[in-house]
Amino acid sequence: MKPRIYIETSIPSFYYEVRQEPEMVARRHWTRYWWEHEREKYELVTSEAVITELSQGDYPSKEQTLALIEPLALLDVEDPIAEIIETYIARQVMPKDPGGDALHLALASYHRCDYLLTWNCRI
Image (tube, rainbow, N blue to C red; front, side):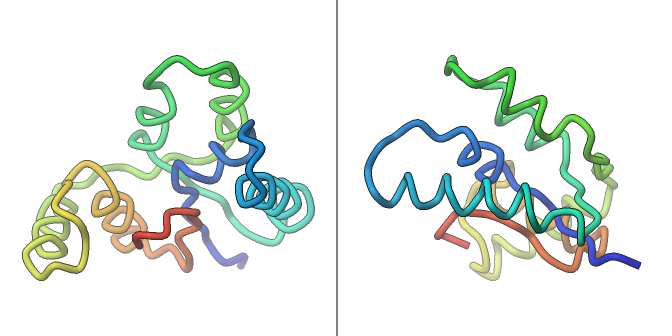
C-alpha cells in the first residue's frame, strides 16, 4: 500500500508559478521535479477546499492548475472535521482561519494521510 499524501493548494500553484525571483523559480523546479518523478510512489488526494482556493482569482494558468489535480481523489468533509479545526485553533496549533490551513490539516489528519504536501511555510 502506497503512503497517502494530501496535496495542498500551494503544490499545484507552484507547479505553474511564473514569478522569476530565484526562490520562486527554485520552488517551481522542485515542485515539477517531484510531480514528474516521485508522485507515482504515493496515493495522492486533495479536497474540494483546494479546488475552491485554486478557482478563486484570475490568473493565466488557472485551467492548467485545476487540470493538474483533477485526477486526484477528493477527501470528504465529514462532521468531525469541524471539531478538529476548532481544537487546532483553540490550542494555537494553526492560524485562526477555519477555512485555510487548519481545514487542510484537519482533512489530512481525519483521513489518515501519511503526509501533507505544501509550500506553505506557516505550517
